[in-house]
Length: 198
Image (cartoon, rainbow, N blue to C red; front, side, top):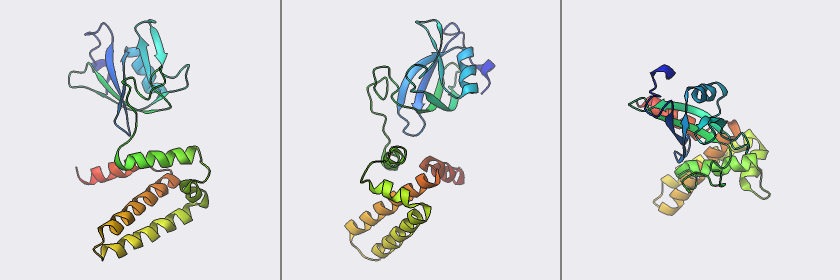
């Protein structure tokens, strides 16, 4: 993205910025940037806006600690609006809500489960099976993935829908734990699959 190609003239030196969670795809908030805020965001990798009420730059999270860590910036077709994908650190709205639109910022499908596993990894919970697995180390987690894969293959030979689906769920869960243990994300796997099928 070339900053000079953006049209800051329509809103007297500002462009609207739609902020979206890079993992959940939930829209978190709307803010405005001038050229200086955009440059600061790109350099520091933390989203900085231009406050129209305070007439100054403000980095989201500068007082709360709830920063928006930059993943990507994409201009729209008219080069006068930005889509900013982020990894939020805590609640986004000043009210304490996940988003400024009173929505929960949660993943769907496997990303929802991945989010729970990441929470357990960062904040261990007593009695958690996930934490027990993670603390056992990579070899144990990898072994469990292998065991679950074999159990799924065995169930695939029969016609018991419930048992097959349960084993499929177990395999997916343990696969996500292994990804977390290795420090990788489901999104990285998805991106690789997308590259294979352009």
